[in-house]
Length: 130
Figure 1 (cartoon, helix red, strand yellow):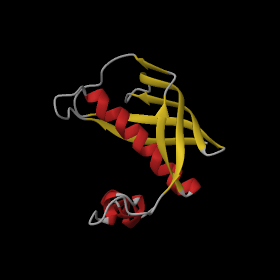
Figure 2 (spheres, rainbow, N blue to C red):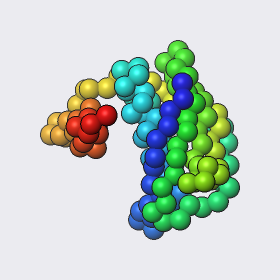
Figure 3 (cartoon, rainbow, N blue to C red):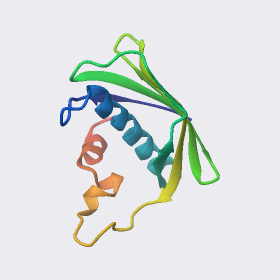
């Protein structure tokens, strides 16, 4: 399946903005997995990561992922593209483990921290007109 969304390249804790963009791409894929499969995707490995350039701080990137669920896993490739459609980074051979969601990870942790359907960002998107 093809997944598309926008991620931001933010300089967090002194890391390269690419780190947050890659994290955003993996979070988008995990959210898609919850919606499509009812289970989250926990990243296990990436065969190769091609970095063509470091994105600018605050730059919006289009994430295009092609993922296929298979026997408890999610597998495929993920691309980050700039505003002109040029590749910034490419993850090849991504594999994630499909895991059940909805169980509290620890007592006292608010559900909006581990249930994607309760993320404030998801609720905001659901309230927007189509």
